[in-house]
Image 1 (cartoon, helix red, strand yellow):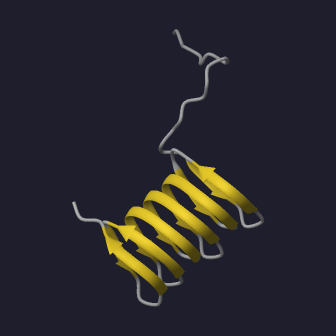
Image 2: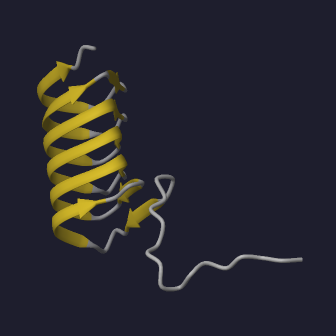
Length: 119
């Protein structure tokens, strides 16, 4: 019977379950930050900080990534700090990676330094 509507003057709530998709036709240079997850289908050159990051099959990320969960299906070149790092079969990664959990599918191409975070 009664409903409460959001105050239009208040700041929007940050939803950590939200997912932002960066389309194939986008090329972004700079810093990207999200309380939720980001899916990169295009190209990013810079710093990404998010709860989760997925790089799609045609996606390309060059730079520094900090995310709890990282899944790579495309290309990544840079530095990664994550809890869970997954390389799918088509992944092409050249990076220094710190992780707690690591999954590498057969066919993934990897080069770099992988460091297990203990604790």
